[in-house]
Image 1 (cartoon, helix red, strand yellow):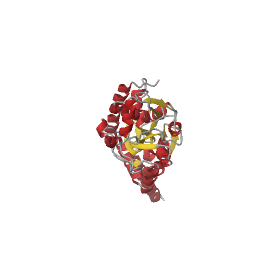
Image 2: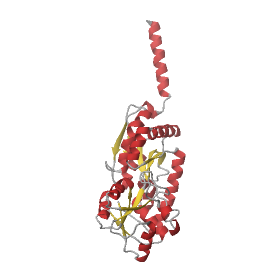
Image 3: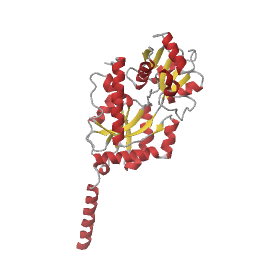
Image 4: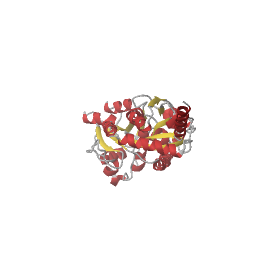
Length: 328
């Protein structure tokens, strides 16, 4: 009897020692929260729900998506900034709230570089420059020529002031040296619809939202915003390709989405989560689901993601300053 008790105590001690060697996030029975700073149905939310099951599989914990919308995504980001760095709370962030908003909002509540730990990208979702069918242009060159002929008469719609789609238009105006009037909307859907209805001349819209209307004859696609063509629309040139002789050779807007953790998260925990993200995104079913959304699966290391974030913040701050964009 005494011997059995000693064996049980020894085994229990070994189990405790083994569990104490695991990182905090692996010891907890609580699910990991993947916070999204936007309502359900948007790109951040869709991508988060696509990767969550596989991410949970590789983290060996359930991963639940929580929507914390408001303030152009910053409410969700602040939820993660304030969370403990134990790997239990993550953010599915994107270029808009995490790289552009700090320059657009005078009293932005956090520093994306200091207050968050970039873990890994998840995907890139190209945007498309598309025009209403009645606009007499069929290429980027023709659009630039028309804009220079009639400065301020052409209009472009966006999903809101200070968004990635708005800044895509401002960068285009800056590099092509044209003046096109910005018309902000509350969301991508109404902006795209008004261009399709002929009320606004053009839009820099997310490829998944724009291409169905292009293929249905309600919009005309002139170019995609990344520097290379998209596998989801290989027939459409890039702005850099189509506008190389017009000052647009270096045009590059590649909207990205990625996972962040609180800045206090230990480096080894960050590395473990990054590895789980890479495995989840590399899963064939996940990659195929991302492709169906017009997204290109894309991962990197925490160091690479941090370098990208810093470069994006610097880039967009310059564009915001040039365009004098301010949102209260």
